[in-house]
Image (cartoon, rainbow, N blue to C red; front, side, top):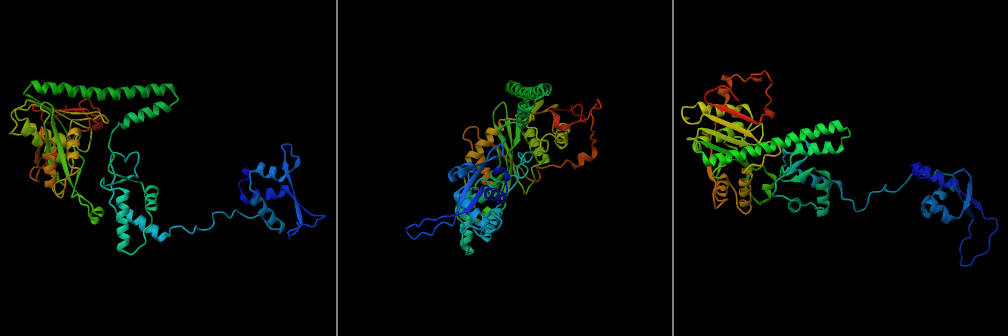
Amino acid sequence: FWKIGSFSAQNSFICGLVQQHKVERQRPRGGGKEPKSSTNRFHVILIDGTSVNVCKKYFLGTYQISDGRMTRALKVAKKGLSPGADGRGKRNPINKIPEVEMAVVRQHILNFPSYESHYTRAHNPNRKYLPENLNIRLMYNLYKDYCTEHNIRPVKEGIYRRTFNTEFNLHFHAPHKETCIRCGEFKNKIDHIVDEEQKRTLQQQHEVHLRKAEKARESMSIDTEKSKSDNTFYAFTFDLEKSLAFPKLTCQVAYYKRNCYLYNLGCHELATKLGFMYCWDETVGSKGSQEVGACILKHIQTRASTANRVVMYSDSCTGQNRNFKMSLILMRLLQSEDNREISIIDHKFMQSGHSYLPNDCDFASIKNHSRLQQIFCPEDWHRVIMTARKKNAFHLTVMTSDDLISTENMESRVTRRKSDTDNSKVNWLKIQWLRYTKSDPFTIF
């Protein structure tokens, strides 16, 4: 019965199983009730196709329908009409929010500036993020103020919250990259793949991935100990902190405007555990490989001028660290007239997804210290950075436009070969270690 699907067809089926008969003899009834003109006989069709006469209660229980539905279907059929379609849900509820008011809610949510995150673009390309100082309660309070100013009746907070959660793919603050995406992909494939041969291949690839990560950690530990005992060996890590927004305002207008940003590159000495911060705002430069390279150049010239060998560790971000522009800057450093001691620079990359650097702890100190600070301009961020730690305070260098360099002239004078000495194609995404030597000025090892 329920597989028939159509509400009208189900009612026709019900009417076909109920036979209406005229009452042949009536008894006088008290109470002024109108005598019945007809009576019903109910039937149930068995598996073998035979029809069995049953009572009304058994009939309704067998087909799981209400007495009201059956009565309405029989009443329409008695008039010689079709049982008709389902009339439920055809009327607008009296408490429905007008579409004009809902349009105001949607437009108000869209007024807040949102941005994408490069961490989640691959697996969730439509997700966008709102500033971390916002929440739905604060947005709703701003919405009520907006309605008061424009003489509009505001909707309830529950309606505003439901609209935000169901109609928009918005989240607050950029997600933190806590786990390795590659490891997650390997685990998901291994758990669901059926072919044993393919499963063993994936397990071997995952094991190689984990061994590379472990090897990079061991290499950094060895270089840390060596830098403590050898003054001619200098080792450090570097990373670019999440963009620092300013100003931090609480007035209504600020939530609808785009913030300015300060960029901070942190260098962490492995021997002394000292942190060095190099800051510049977006009016000075962007956060590309040339800006990062300029900071690395200044750091090495300042802290490693007497070293013979420099080793630096970073994550595998190709756009900022592992690219041809960064290589040109380091090659230029080795061949400059000011460099008299450094003969080798090693740039080692942590395994993607396992790049846990000491810089992460440095940046966490800055973030925690900034929570209760008033920040209106870049100088306020400078103050926060310098006072983030009482012990081993950070050393701050404010980069200017004169400190930043361009590799355009060097790129035009150097041939960028796409294959190595063995005629194998160079894939920058798979490089884990780059070496630059003063004795071979135009060769990358």
